[in-house]
Length: 232
Image 1: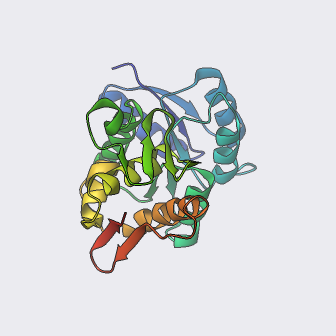
Image 2 (image 1 turned 135 degrees about the vertical axis):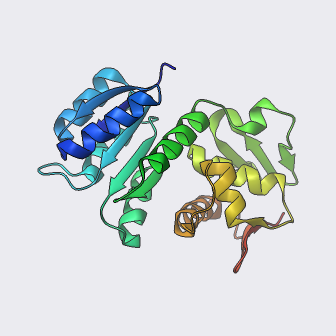
């Protein structure tokens, strides 16, 4: 396994604990203990994934994540954010910046490893629809998997990899409900943990992008208590 993981956390004990467990799992681990050095190391090493703490002195994790996403060399690196804050606003802020997944402290190390494996597996592959003969076009909607985009009536919206995977799953099952549990399992790669707010935030972002090209039509329907459905 050649995956490099950069851990940015000012808590020396937690940073070292994560490093040891990731190395035991076969990863090569880089460490930074503040945001400035973490961003510099990200640019220098271009890791496969970044584990990033929120609460750090001087430069916090949100700021580091913004810098990573704005830099062309690091913009596509998946970020797993760690935080002791469980408030939904902090999750929304992280996802708005472009964080890929979120883990609230304290957490089990096995859970961290599951999230890391899932992120690396997803980002190492092109979307399923690009590699298989899945449906790519229905009505006015066309999927453009090679550039993570969707086209509606000749207008194109660029999506993040996670947004594209969500839309593709809904698209392949259009007209039928896709449960929150199924989304968590197939998109994030781990069993449902009742963290449905993660899905809600990404669905909200996806809807906002579709609204700009859909001429007023609402394609994604919420099935309350169940999941989501794409109506074409």
